Length: 71
Image 1 (cartoon, rainbow, N blue to C red):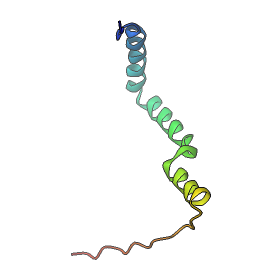
Image 2 (cartoon, one colour):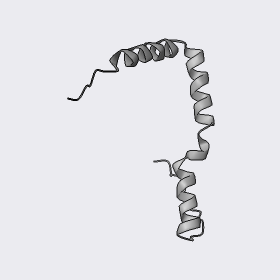
Image 3 (cartoon, rainbow, N blue to C red):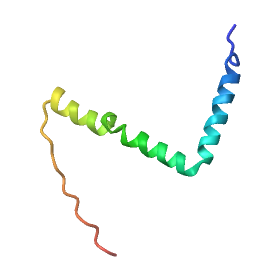
């Protein structure tokens, strides 16, 4: 038999801690900023650039986007 609720108590306790942390706006913002700033190494842009260079052996192409004319 499959027990969906076997660890529900620990899940509920963790959710309460997350909820309390989220209510601390300054602390939450600081945590979010630190998480984002430390995750740059794992971005999809970096991965695609590595694939293009190391696997597909492609050169980087720069595309200029023209500014929109005001209508």
